[in-house]
Amino acid sequence: MQLVPINVFKCLADETRLRVMLLISREGELCVCELTCALGASQPKISRHLAALRQCGLLQDRRQGQWVYYSLSERLPEWVTQVLQSTLQANVAWLGANQRQLNAMGDRPLRQLACC
Image 1 (cartoon, rainbow, N blue to C red):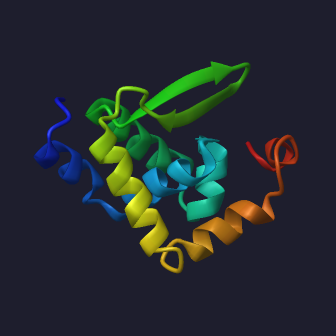
Image 2 (image 1 turned 135 degrees about the horizontal axis):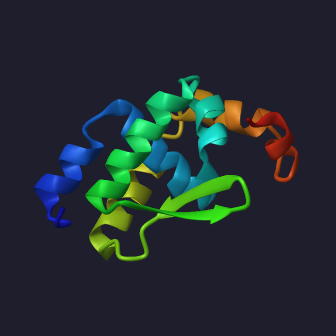
Image 3 (image 1 turned 90 degrees about the horizontal axis):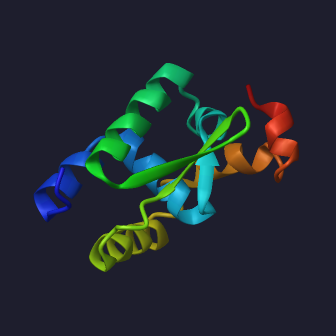
């Protein structure tokens, strides 16, 4: 999918996908188990949304042992990064509960002990 505004905003129109993108924007990278904890959603649901975001060209993944980490695509246009950062900064309260859930897991590597 080409990264043109209509495609980007269609991908971000789902609440779960938007929350995933904002959390990853804030944290740099997250794995599925961190996102399931932060969003209080099932692993299949989060994986489905991550696949959609990868297909849209918004996310990339990397494998490290049994873990798969997701981060913003290196090919994101600057305007997409700016939209995400502006949205994140203007909506800290909206993402607050998700961020608290993620923070409750502790920092890595402790987070990995709480995962999967």
